[in-house]
Length: 338
Image (cartoon, rainbow, N blue to C red; front, side, top):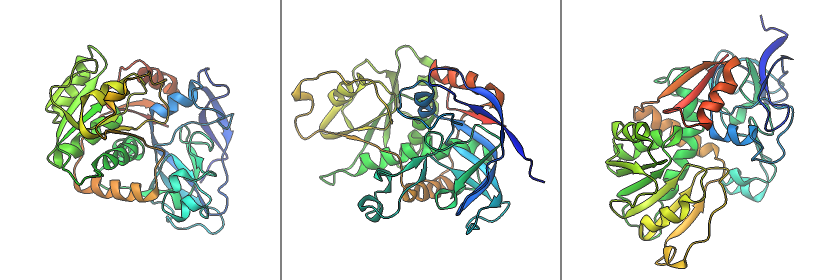
């Protein structure tokens, strides 16, 4: 029997802790599913929302966009995912489907897009509703806890990584630098190593635990981000929300190399000399994801066994999980369990 209420952690005002709350169970609308949440990973983007670094969240808001759960009811016209099936709910929650971006396969840039845990209620709760078109089937090799980080750390990391591999001159990408070694980087490092690439991991100064974590997952080198790279990089992926890393990453690139900024928020980028960008080096940002990204990455994750490192917290300790992420106390991803 489906209950009439649910527990949730709610953001009332940015900059304040989440508040435990009892809310009416949400009713699925047309094309939506009601999902009983089994696990929801904690993303750095959740921090940006909670800390007020992203504008105009839909307050009061239930954060969380790396949701694993089971379908318990459908709205009108639903049924794409049968009752009882396990699904994943990502950041991209809805698009218009008819603008030029949606028609061209760039739905991640849709101006009418809505986002789970930001402009739509998310998964820091016992139940959530989601548009069935934007839910994913998940690889059976991962249990609920270890599947949850795949839905953003994995998806956005994968989009950034594939963007780096799209070399304009057709050259081979042999060495990849990862700036910030958290939930996304620890997954993408494994994909890059499995594909025969050298991974160099750059962490906050003195973070020997993260540096050892990177080496354990196959990185050929790891060290402080303010150190000179031991070899020129073909590509650099910046996961840490630190603008000062961009000039450092540019300085580490070989001619023609790329810097990919993978976060949705970054502190201001300092001025840098043009010589760092010259010789056809480039900078790109990653915005959101497409459903094609999700299908591609989850298929790959089903074929390439990924070690997903997690720390679990009960839902009521969501503020503690967020603070552990904020303070850099995690290796891998935090996951909330309702």
